[in-house]
Image (cartoon, rainbow, N blue to C red; front, side, top):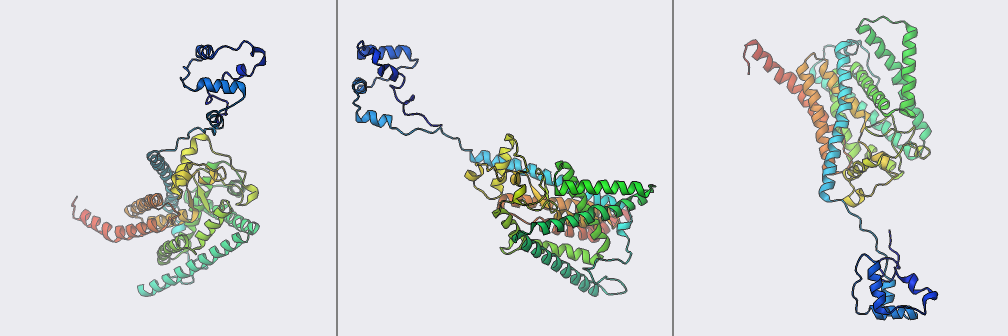
Length: 452
């Protein structure tokens, strides 16, 4: 908001119409009377400038002095904008980090509880029926030594990681070439398989486990409505909570499939290998996930809705420019969250204080890949299959501690970080330490009736 040159900055601005009125030119009051009249009309006293009389005469005769010209041509002053204090910015970042932590702990905990409850109530996912995934040709069966199992598990894990790497590179290639329709069809096919086929198997085994009778027509109607609503919410639009619930259920279903069809040693080797792969894919300059995120950032596009869990943003159908206007702008009281999010993402305080309308939807909340949900659930679900609540609770706590440390490092480093390495490492250590060290120790104490 600028101030005009004839505004309050000019001491003659209020009286200019009087001075320029030709009808009163013959009865012009004296200089002293004019100043007294101005003081009587103005609530504020006029400063006693010794040259004010000369300026009045110059103004009346049309001759302006250099001081008058300088004063009239003074550049307009812009109102001062209060910049946020650095302490206030740090406090906003802290509050945003705490809310972000809660927004991730709740859905991760729900996903883990769904998997653990299913493992404890349905025996289907813990029974070995001799069926395995095609990516694991070595099945660790028969009377073989631990060394052979170690080699087979290592080979299976390397094959699975290689498949994941190839598929990710292929996805990055399609995204770089803007083959959005192919990616959309690929993701929709995966969602259809999970929402209809695997959900049908899960629902059938759940009814069988709880001994509930239901006819096939009712089951077909339930699965149809469940799948169609899920496809709409994930790949088009719908309530945010409903989309989040479907993404959590999809992650739980995929985790149960891995627990069911992966050999035991291979599963633990895959968890360790996927953590190392996550470090490479996110942190390395040529990592596929980093390239994918950089391309999306350069194009100002959101990533795929069926691969990302967002805490406060409803994703549109596809990450293309034609759907960029679907998301609504956040309310005004979310500005500090946007600023804190931009600061945590690596922007300085000046950049964080300038909200960008194009980046508001992407930066309103925290995001976590569904792969992280899946492998967290695989670890805790496999630990719960050993019928040891101490191990299950220890792995559950280890996952949450690793997630908190990852968010802490995110606030310190202020760049994208992999979410698997810390949590999976803690989970594996807690699992084997509890099973082979703490559990035998507590059982020996119980047998000797010794209490600590």
